[in-house]
Amino acid sequence: MTATAAYFARARTDGRDWLVEADEPLAGLQLRSGGELPGIVATPALLEMVRKARRYGLKLARAIRAQDGREQVTAWVEIEPEADGEGCTIGIANWHATALPPADAAMADARRVAIERQVAEMSVRLGPDQQVIAVECDSEELEGIAARLRASRGERWTDLIQLDLDDGPGEPLDWRLLDGTRISIPGSSRHWKAVLLPLGPRPEKAGFELLLVADEPPAEQPPVAAKAEPRTIFDAAMGREIAPVLRQPIARIIANAETIRTQLAGPVAEEYSKYAADIATAGEHLLALIDDLTDLEVVESDTFDTAPDTIDLADVARRAAGILGVRAQERAIEIHAPGEDDSIPAVGEFRRVLQILLNLLGNALRYAPEGSHVRLIVERNDGRAQVTVADQGPGLSADQQAKVFEKFERLGRSGDGGSGLGLYISRRLARAMAGELSVESTPGEGARFTLDLPSFEERRTKPR
Image 1: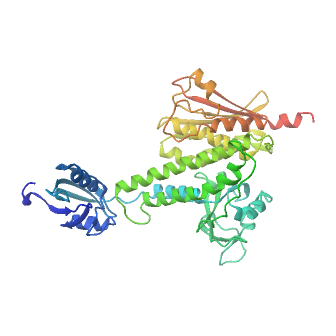
Image 2: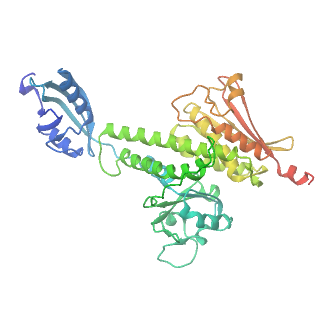
Image 3: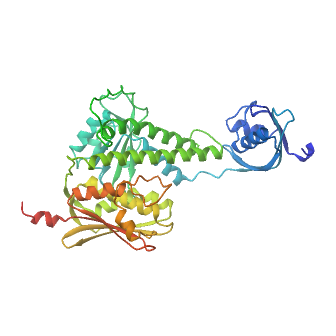
Protein backbone atom coordinates (compact mmCIF):
# COMPACT_ATOMS: atom_id res chain seq x y z
CA MET A 1 0.00 0.00 0.00
CA THR A 2 1.25 3.53 -0.73
CA ALA A 3 2.58 5.85 1.92
CA THR A 4 0.31 6.82 4.80
CA ALA A 5 0.49 10.50 3.87
CA ALA A 6 -1.30 9.79 0.59
CA TYR A 7 -4.52 8.89 2.38
CA PHE A 8 -7.20 11.10 3.81
CA ALA A 9 -8.16 8.37 6.31
CA ARG A 10 -7.19 4.82 7.17
CA ALA A 11 -9.06 1.84 8.60
CA ARG A 12 -8.64 -1.87 9.31
CA THR A 13 -10.99 -4.89 9.22
CA ASP A 14 -10.66 -8.38 10.70
CA GLY A 15 -11.50 -11.86 9.38
CA ARG A 16 -15.21 -11.33 10.06
CA ASP A 17 -15.24 -8.20 7.87
CA TRP A 18 -15.76 -6.09 10.97
CA LEU A 19 -14.44 -2.55 11.00
CA VAL A 20 -12.14 -2.64 14.06
CA GLU A 21 -10.26 0.62 13.54
CA ALA A 22 -11.21 3.71 11.53
CA ASP A 23 -10.21 7.34 11.26
CA GLU A 24 -12.71 10.12 10.82
CA PRO A 25 -14.74 10.73 8.72
CA LEU A 26 -15.16 6.99 7.94
CA ALA A 27 -15.85 6.22 11.61
CA GLY A 28 -18.67 8.77 11.64
CA LEU A 29 -20.17 7.39 8.42
CA GLN A 30 -20.08 3.89 9.93
CA LEU A 31 -22.06 5.00 12.98
CA ARG A 32 -24.56 7.20 11.11
CA SER A 33 -25.29 4.33 8.71
CA GLY A 34 -26.50 2.19 11.60
CA GLY A 35 -23.26 0.30 12.23
CA GLU A 36 -21.05 -0.03 15.27
CA LEU A 37 -17.33 0.36 15.89
CA PRO A 38 -16.14 -2.33 16.11
CA GLY A 39 -18.83 -3.91 13.96
CA ILE A 40 -19.63 -5.24 10.50
CA VAL A 41 -18.89 -2.70 7.74
CA ALA A 42 -22.16 -0.76 7.34
CA THR A 43 -21.47 0.78 3.92
CA PRO A 44 -22.53 -1.84 1.30
CA ALA A 45 -20.10 -0.76 -1.43
CA LEU A 46 -17.17 -0.79 1.01
CA LEU A 47 -18.24 -4.13 2.50
CA GLU A 48 -18.33 -5.69 -0.98
CA MET A 49 -14.76 -4.54 -1.69
CA VAL A 50 -13.49 -5.78 1.68
CA ARG A 51 -15.03 -9.23 1.19
CA LYS A 52 -13.59 -9.64 -2.31
CA ALA A 53 -10.13 -8.47 -1.27
CA ARG A 54 -10.02 -10.83 1.73
CA ARG A 55 -11.47 -13.90 -0.02
CA TYR A 56 -9.34 -13.70 -3.17
CA GLY A 57 -6.22 -12.13 -1.71
CA LEU A 58 -6.37 -9.25 -4.17
CA LYS A 59 -5.58 -5.58 -3.78
CA LEU A 60 -8.58 -3.58 -4.98
CA ALA A 61 -8.99 0.12 -5.73
CA ARG A 62 -11.99 2.04 -7.01
CA ALA A 63 -14.37 4.92 -6.29
CA ILE A 64 -17.38 4.24 -4.08
CA ARG A 65 -20.57 6.13 -3.24
CA ALA A 66 -22.40 6.06 0.08
CA GLN A 67 -24.90 8.10 2.03
CA ASP A 68 -26.32 8.50 5.49
CA GLY A 69 -29.25 10.60 6.61
CA ARG A 70 -27.37 13.86 6.08
CA GLU A 71 -24.76 13.54 3.33
CA GLN A 72 -23.89 11.78 0.11
CA VAL A 73 -20.24 10.74 -0.01
CA THR A 74 -17.87 9.84 -2.86
CA ALA A 75 -14.35 8.61 -2.15
CA TRP A 76 -11.42 6.72 -3.67
CA VAL A 77 -10.79 3.51 -1.72
CA GLU A 78 -7.79 1.18 -1.81
CA ILE A 79 -8.02 -2.14 0.05
CA GLU A 80 -5.14 -4.54 0.62
CA PRO A 81 -5.56 -7.95 2.33
CA GLU A 82 -3.20 -8.61 5.22
CA ALA A 83 -0.59 -11.33 4.86
CA ASP A 84 -2.32 -13.71 7.29
CA GLY A 85 -5.58 -13.46 5.33
CA GLU A 86 -7.54 -12.50 8.43
CA GLY A 87 -8.30 -8.90 7.57
CA CYS A 88 -7.64 -5.90 5.34
CA THR A 89 -6.15 -2.45 5.56
CA ILE A 90 -8.15 0.39 4.00
CA GLY A 91 -6.88 3.66 2.62
CA ILE A 92 -9.26 6.45 1.61
CA ALA A 93 -8.50 9.45 -0.58
CA ASN A 94 -10.48 12.21 -2.32
CA TRP A 95 -13.32 12.20 0.20
CA HIS A 96 -16.15 14.48 -0.94
CA ALA A 97 -19.35 14.94 1.04
CA THR A 98 -22.39 16.94 -0.13
CA ALA A 99 -25.65 17.57 1.67
CA LEU A 100 -28.59 15.45 0.52
CA PRO A 101 -31.23 17.42 -1.39
CA PRO A 102 -34.53 17.96 0.42
CA ALA A 103 -37.17 15.32 -0.27
CA ASP A 104 -39.67 16.14 -3.00
CA ALA A 105 -42.97 16.79 -1.23
CA ALA A 106 -45.12 15.55 -4.11
CA MET A 107 -43.19 12.29 -4.45
CA ALA A 108 -43.26 11.74 -0.69
CA ASP A 109 -47.03 12.23 -0.68
CA ALA A 110 -47.44 9.82 -3.59
CA ARG A 111 -45.41 7.20 -1.71
CA ARG A 112 -47.54 7.72 1.40
CA VAL A 113 -50.69 7.19 -0.64
CA ALA A 114 -49.25 4.02 -2.18
CA ILE A 115 -48.44 2.64 1.28
CA GLU A 116 -51.91 3.45 2.61
CA ARG A 117 -53.56 1.70 -0.35
CA GLN A 118 -51.47 -1.42 0.17
CA VAL A 119 -52.30 -1.85 3.87
CA ALA A 120 -55.95 -0.75 3.69
CA GLU A 121 -58.45 -3.52 4.49
CA MET A 122 -61.45 -1.73 2.99
CA SER A 123 -61.77 0.71 0.10
CA VAL A 124 -64.86 2.80 -0.58
CA ARG A 125 -65.41 4.80 -3.75
CA LEU A 126 -67.09 8.10 -2.89
CA GLY A 127 -68.83 10.67 -5.04
CA PRO A 128 -68.14 14.42 -5.04
CA ASP A 129 -70.31 14.88 -1.92
CA GLN A 130 -68.59 11.91 -0.21
CA GLN A 131 -71.60 9.71 -0.88
CA VAL A 132 -71.01 5.95 -1.04
CA ILE A 133 -70.76 4.48 -4.56
CA ALA A 134 -68.93 1.13 -4.26
CA VAL A 135 -67.28 -0.90 -1.48
CA GLU A 136 -64.39 -3.39 -1.54
CA CYS A 137 -63.63 -5.24 1.72
CA ASP A 138 -60.80 -7.68 2.52
CA SER A 139 -61.37 -8.07 6.28
CA GLU A 140 -63.91 -10.15 8.18
CA GLU A 141 -63.79 -7.54 10.98
CA LEU A 142 -65.12 -4.93 8.54
CA GLU A 143 -67.84 -7.01 6.87
CA GLY A 144 -70.51 -5.47 9.09
CA ILE A 145 -69.49 -1.94 8.17
CA ALA A 146 -69.10 -2.95 4.51
CA ALA A 147 -72.63 -4.40 4.41
CA ARG A 148 -74.03 -1.24 5.96
CA LEU A 149 -72.27 0.96 3.41
CA ARG A 150 -73.41 -1.21 0.49
CA ALA A 151 -76.98 -1.01 1.72
CA SER A 152 -76.75 2.79 1.97
CA ARG A 153 -75.35 3.78 -1.41
CA GLY A 154 -75.91 7.45 -2.07
CA GLU A 155 -75.55 8.46 1.61
CA ARG A 156 -72.52 10.25 3.09
CA TRP A 157 -70.07 7.84 4.66
CA THR A 158 -69.71 10.05 7.74
CA ASP A 159 -73.37 9.30 8.57
CA LEU A 160 -72.69 5.57 8.51
CA ILE A 161 -69.34 5.19 10.34
CA GLN A 162 -68.65 6.37 13.90
CA LEU A 163 -65.92 9.02 13.92
CA ASP A 164 -63.84 9.70 17.03
CA LEU A 165 -64.21 13.48 16.85
CA ASP A 166 -64.20 15.95 19.71
CA ASP A 167 -66.97 17.97 18.09
CA GLY A 168 -70.48 16.65 18.02
CA PRO A 169 -72.73 16.40 14.96
CA GLY A 170 -72.84 19.52 12.86
CA GLU A 171 -72.13 20.78 9.39
CA PRO A 172 -70.26 18.36 7.09
CA LEU A 173 -66.49 18.70 7.51
CA ASP A 174 -64.07 19.48 4.71
CA TRP A 175 -62.41 16.30 3.43
CA ARG A 176 -58.97 17.53 4.54
CA LEU A 177 -60.16 17.53 8.15
CA LEU A 178 -61.53 14.00 7.81
CA ASP A 179 -58.30 12.55 6.40
CA GLY A 180 -56.59 10.63 9.22
CA THR A 181 -59.60 10.69 11.54
CA ARG A 182 -59.78 7.85 14.06
CA ILE A 183 -62.85 5.66 13.74
CA SER A 184 -64.54 3.04 15.89
CA ILE A 185 -65.32 -0.38 14.46
CA PRO A 186 -67.83 -2.37 16.55
CA GLY A 187 -66.42 -5.75 17.55
CA SER A 188 -62.83 -4.94 16.55
CA SER A 189 -60.04 -4.67 19.11
CA ARG A 190 -57.74 -2.94 16.65
CA HIS A 191 -57.29 0.82 16.21
CA TRP A 192 -58.51 2.18 12.86
CA LYS A 193 -58.20 5.39 10.91
CA ALA A 194 -59.90 6.79 7.84
CA VAL A 195 -57.69 7.87 4.93
CA LEU A 196 -59.49 10.12 2.44
CA LEU A 197 -57.84 10.51 -0.96
CA PRO A 198 -59.08 12.95 -3.62
CA LEU A 199 -59.47 11.51 -7.12
CA GLY A 200 -57.80 13.92 -9.48
CA PRO A 201 -57.11 17.62 -9.04
CA ARG A 202 -60.85 18.45 -8.72
CA PRO A 203 -62.36 16.02 -6.19
CA GLU A 204 -65.49 18.15 -5.98
CA LYS A 205 -66.27 16.69 -9.41
CA ALA A 206 -64.32 13.40 -9.55
CA GLY A 207 -64.96 12.23 -5.99
CA PHE A 208 -62.81 10.51 -3.37
CA GLU A 209 -61.42 7.17 -2.26
CA LEU A 210 -61.93 6.22 1.39
CA LEU A 211 -59.51 3.70 2.92
CA LEU A 212 -59.89 2.03 6.31
CA VAL A 213 -56.45 1.27 7.74
CA ALA A 214 -55.59 -0.53 10.98
CA ASP A 215 -52.58 0.31 13.12
CA GLU A 216 -52.04 -3.38 13.93
CA PRO A 217 -52.10 -6.53 11.77
CA PRO A 218 -55.05 -8.89 12.24
CA ALA A 219 -54.85 -11.63 14.84
CA GLU A 220 -53.61 -14.96 13.59
CA GLN A 221 -56.41 -17.24 12.42
CA PRO A 222 -56.64 -20.91 13.45
CA PRO A 223 -55.55 -23.31 10.71
CA VAL A 224 -58.26 -24.38 8.29
CA ALA A 225 -59.15 -28.04 8.60
CA ALA A 226 -58.25 -30.12 5.58
CA LYS A 227 -61.13 -31.09 3.35
CA ALA A 228 -61.69 -34.65 2.27
CA GLU A 229 -62.77 -33.92 -1.28
CA PRO A 230 -60.10 -33.16 -3.92
CA ARG A 231 -59.74 -29.62 -5.23
CA THR A 232 -59.35 -28.40 -8.75
CA ILE A 233 -56.64 -25.85 -9.57
CA PHE A 234 -58.81 -22.72 -9.26
CA ASP A 235 -61.56 -23.70 -6.82
CA ALA A 236 -62.93 -21.60 -3.98
CA ALA A 237 -59.75 -22.08 -1.92
CA MET A 238 -58.07 -19.12 -3.65
CA GLY A 239 -60.86 -16.69 -2.89
CA ARG A 240 -62.07 -17.89 0.50
CA GLU A 241 -58.90 -19.12 2.16
CA ILE A 242 -55.58 -18.51 0.43
CA ALA A 243 -56.04 -14.96 -0.91
CA PRO A 244 -57.19 -13.32 2.38
CA VAL A 245 -54.40 -15.08 4.30
CA LEU A 246 -51.70 -13.93 1.86
CA ARG A 247 -52.92 -10.42 1.07
CA GLN A 248 -52.38 -8.83 4.50
CA PRO A 249 -48.82 -10.07 5.21
CA ILE A 250 -47.74 -9.18 1.66
CA ALA A 251 -49.22 -5.71 2.09
CA ARG A 252 -47.27 -5.32 5.34
CA ILE A 253 -44.06 -6.39 3.60
CA ILE A 254 -44.66 -3.77 0.92
CA ALA A 255 -45.39 -1.09 3.52
CA ASN A 256 -42.26 -1.91 5.52
CA ALA A 257 -40.12 -1.97 2.37
CA GLU A 258 -41.50 1.44 1.34
CA THR A 259 -40.74 2.78 4.81
CA ILE A 260 -37.12 1.66 4.44
CA ARG A 261 -36.87 2.91 0.85
CA THR A 262 -38.16 6.38 1.69
CA GLN A 263 -36.10 6.51 4.91
CA LEU A 264 -39.18 7.40 6.95
CA ALA A 265 -37.84 5.36 9.89
CA GLY A 266 -34.29 6.73 9.67
CA PRO A 267 -31.34 7.01 7.28
CA VAL A 268 -30.12 3.97 5.32
CA ALA A 269 -27.45 3.54 2.69
CA GLU A 270 -28.45 4.11 -0.92
CA GLU A 271 -27.89 0.44 -1.81
CA TYR A 272 -30.24 -0.70 0.98
CA SER A 273 -32.84 1.78 -0.23
CA LYS A 274 -32.64 0.21 -3.71
CA TYR A 275 -32.97 -3.28 -2.25
CA ALA A 276 -36.09 -2.16 -0.39
CA ALA A 277 -37.53 -0.73 -3.62
CA ASP A 278 -37.02 -4.11 -5.32
CA ILE A 279 -38.78 -5.86 -2.43
CA ALA A 280 -41.73 -3.46 -2.62
CA THR A 281 -42.03 -3.91 -6.40
CA ALA A 282 -41.93 -7.70 -6.12
CA GLY A 283 -44.57 -7.57 -3.40
CA GLU A 284 -46.85 -5.41 -5.52
CA HIS A 285 -46.52 -7.85 -8.42
CA LEU A 286 -47.34 -10.79 -6.13
CA LEU A 287 -50.36 -8.96 -4.71
CA ALA A 288 -51.61 -8.21 -8.23
CA LEU A 289 -51.21 -11.89 -9.14
CA ILE A 290 -53.28 -12.93 -6.12
CA ASP A 291 -56.02 -10.50 -7.15
CA ASP A 292 -55.93 -11.83 -10.72
CA LEU A 293 -56.19 -15.46 -9.59
CA THR A 294 -59.09 -14.57 -7.29
CA ASP A 295 -60.89 -12.80 -10.14
CA LEU A 296 -60.17 -15.76 -12.42
CA GLU A 297 -61.90 -18.07 -9.97
CA VAL A 298 -64.91 -15.76 -9.85
CA VAL A 299 -65.41 -15.25 -13.59
CA GLU A 300 -64.97 -18.95 -14.40
CA SER A 301 -67.54 -20.04 -11.84
CA ASP A 302 -70.74 -21.53 -13.27
CA THR A 303 -72.74 -19.28 -10.96
CA PHE A 304 -70.97 -16.03 -11.84
CA ASP A 305 -73.28 -13.17 -12.76
CA THR A 306 -73.16 -9.38 -12.71
CA ALA A 307 -75.54 -6.82 -11.26
CA PRO A 308 -76.22 -4.50 -14.22
CA ASP A 309 -77.52 -1.02 -13.59
CA THR A 310 -77.69 2.26 -15.46
CA ILE A 311 -74.26 3.92 -15.42
CA ASP A 312 -72.59 6.84 -17.17
CA LEU A 313 -69.73 5.40 -19.21
CA ALA A 314 -68.07 8.82 -19.50
CA ASP A 315 -68.16 9.24 -15.72
CA VAL A 316 -66.55 5.83 -15.16
CA ALA A 317 -63.84 6.71 -17.68
CA ARG A 318 -63.12 9.98 -15.85
CA ARG A 319 -62.84 8.09 -12.55
CA ALA A 320 -60.39 5.58 -14.04
CA ALA A 321 -58.26 8.46 -15.34
CA GLY A 322 -58.31 10.10 -11.90
CA ILE A 323 -57.27 6.91 -10.11
CA LEU A 324 -54.27 6.32 -12.39
CA GLY A 325 -53.36 9.99 -12.75
CA VAL A 326 -50.29 9.76 -10.47
CA ARG A 327 -48.93 6.76 -12.39
CA ALA A 328 -49.34 8.70 -15.64
CA GLN A 329 -47.52 11.73 -14.22
CA GLU A 330 -44.57 9.54 -13.15
CA ARG A 331 -44.07 8.55 -16.82
CA ALA A 332 -44.92 12.00 -18.22
CA ILE A 333 -47.92 10.51 -20.06
CA GLU A 334 -50.96 12.73 -20.53
CA ILE A 335 -54.39 11.12 -20.17
CA HIS A 336 -57.17 12.70 -22.23
CA ALA A 337 -60.40 11.75 -20.45
CA PRO A 338 -63.97 12.60 -21.51
CA GLY A 339 -65.03 16.14 -20.65
CA GLU A 340 -67.29 16.95 -17.73
CA ASP A 341 -70.16 17.61 -20.12
CA ASP A 342 -69.82 14.23 -21.88
CA SER A 343 -72.36 11.61 -20.88
CA ILE A 344 -72.95 8.14 -22.37
CA PRO A 345 -75.66 6.21 -20.48
CA ALA A 346 -75.01 2.47 -20.53
CA VAL A 347 -76.08 -0.71 -18.77
CA GLY A 348 -73.43 -2.51 -16.71
CA GLU A 349 -72.15 -3.12 -13.20
CA PHE A 350 -70.26 0.00 -12.11
CA ARG A 351 -67.56 -1.89 -10.20
CA ARG A 352 -66.85 -4.31 -13.03
CA VAL A 353 -66.79 -1.62 -15.72
CA LEU A 354 -64.33 0.39 -13.63
CA GLN A 355 -62.20 -2.75 -13.17
CA ILE A 356 -62.06 -3.27 -16.95
CA LEU A 357 -61.12 0.35 -17.65
CA LEU A 358 -58.42 0.35 -14.95
CA ASN A 359 -56.91 -2.74 -16.56
CA LEU A 360 -56.98 -1.25 -20.06
CA LEU A 361 -55.66 2.11 -18.93
CA GLY A 362 -52.99 0.50 -16.74
CA ASN A 363 -51.75 -1.54 -19.71
CA ALA A 364 -51.66 1.58 -21.88
CA LEU A 365 -49.58 3.46 -19.28
CA ARG A 366 -47.24 0.51 -18.90
CA TYR A 367 -46.39 0.07 -22.57
CA ALA A 368 -46.86 3.55 -24.06
CA PRO A 369 -43.64 5.59 -24.42
CA GLU A 370 -42.88 8.34 -21.94
CA GLY A 371 -44.17 11.74 -22.99
CA SER A 372 -46.96 10.25 -25.11
CA HIS A 373 -50.76 10.51 -24.86
CA VAL A 374 -53.46 8.03 -23.88
CA ARG A 375 -57.05 8.82 -24.86
CA LEU A 376 -60.32 7.62 -23.36
CA ILE A 377 -62.97 8.09 -26.05
CA VAL A 378 -66.68 7.52 -25.37
CA GLU A 379 -69.29 7.31 -28.12
CA ARG A 380 -72.56 5.74 -29.24
CA ASN A 381 -72.33 3.29 -32.11
CA ASP A 382 -75.29 1.43 -33.63
CA GLY A 383 -77.33 1.89 -30.48
CA ARG A 384 -74.50 0.66 -28.23
CA ALA A 385 -72.38 2.52 -25.66
CA GLN A 386 -68.62 2.31 -26.20
CA VAL A 387 -65.44 3.49 -24.51
CA THR A 388 -62.06 3.14 -26.22
CA VAL A 389 -58.61 3.31 -24.64
CA ALA A 390 -56.15 4.39 -27.34
CA ASP A 391 -52.39 4.56 -26.76
CA GLN A 392 -49.28 5.45 -28.78
CA GLY A 393 -47.37 2.29 -27.90
CA PRO A 394 -45.68 -0.28 -30.14
CA GLY A 395 -48.98 -1.78 -31.26
CA LEU A 396 -49.89 -5.43 -31.89
CA SER A 397 -49.50 -7.65 -34.94
CA ALA A 398 -52.43 -9.64 -36.31
CA ASP A 399 -51.16 -12.79 -34.57
CA GLN A 400 -50.80 -10.93 -31.26
CA GLN A 401 -54.30 -9.50 -31.53
CA ALA A 402 -55.65 -13.03 -31.99
CA LYS A 403 -53.94 -14.18 -28.77
CA VAL A 404 -54.13 -11.12 -26.53
CA PHE A 405 -57.35 -12.17 -24.75
CA GLU A 406 -56.20 -15.73 -24.04
CA LYS A 407 -55.56 -16.93 -20.50
CA PHE A 408 -51.96 -16.40 -19.26
CA GLU A 409 -51.01 -14.81 -22.60
CA ARG A 410 -48.26 -12.20 -22.17
CA LEU A 411 -47.14 -11.99 -25.82
CA GLY A 412 -43.55 -12.84 -24.95
CA ARG A 413 -43.21 -9.98 -22.45
CA SER A 414 -41.11 -10.55 -19.34
CA GLY A 415 -40.07 -8.52 -16.34
CA ASP A 416 -43.22 -6.37 -16.05
CA GLY A 417 -44.84 -8.47 -13.36
CA GLY A 418 -48.03 -9.10 -15.34
CA SER A 419 -49.88 -12.39 -14.95
CA GLY A 420 -51.37 -12.58 -18.43
CA LEU A 421 -54.86 -12.71 -16.91
CA GLY A 422 -56.03 -9.09 -16.98
CA LEU A 423 -57.41 -8.97 -20.50
CA TYR A 424 -58.82 -12.49 -20.30
CA ILE A 425 -60.74 -11.55 -17.12
CA SER A 426 -61.80 -8.21 -18.59
CA ARG A 427 -63.34 -9.85 -21.68
CA ARG A 428 -65.16 -12.41 -19.49
CA LEU A 429 -66.57 -9.54 -17.42
CA ALA A 430 -67.63 -7.61 -20.53
CA ARG A 431 -69.45 -10.61 -21.97
CA ALA A 432 -71.14 -11.30 -18.63
CA MET A 433 -72.68 -7.82 -18.95
CA ALA A 434 -73.93 -8.57 -22.49
CA GLY A 435 -71.01 -6.56 -23.85
CA GLU A 436 -67.75 -7.18 -25.71
CA LEU A 437 -64.09 -6.23 -25.45
CA SER A 438 -62.12 -5.97 -28.70
CA VAL A 439 -58.83 -4.62 -30.00
CA GLU A 440 -57.68 -2.83 -33.15
CA SER A 441 -54.01 -2.20 -33.73
CA THR A 442 -51.30 -1.66 -36.30
CA PRO A 443 -47.66 -2.36 -35.37
CA GLY A 444 -45.90 0.91 -34.62
CA GLU A 445 -49.15 2.90 -34.39
CA GLY A 446 -50.46 2.00 -30.93
CA ALA A 447 -53.52 -0.01 -29.91
CA ARG A 448 -57.24 0.71 -29.40
CA PHE A 449 -59.11 -1.46 -26.89
CA THR A 450 -62.88 -0.91 -27.01
CA LEU A 451 -65.42 -1.90 -24.38
CA ASP A 452 -68.90 -2.20 -25.89
CA LEU A 453 -71.97 -2.30 -23.60
CA PRO A 454 -75.74 -2.15 -24.05
CA SER A 455 -76.98 1.43 -24.10
CA PHE A 456 -79.63 2.68 -21.71
CA GLU A 457 -82.00 3.16 -24.64
CA GLU A 458 -81.44 -0.43 -25.78
CA ARG A 459 -82.34 -1.76 -22.34
CA ARG A 460 -85.42 0.45 -22.15
CA THR A 461 -86.77 -0.63 -25.53
CA LYS A 462 -85.82 -4.30 -25.31
CA PRO A 463 -88.97 -6.47 -24.89
CA ARG A 464 -89.18 -8.42 -21.66
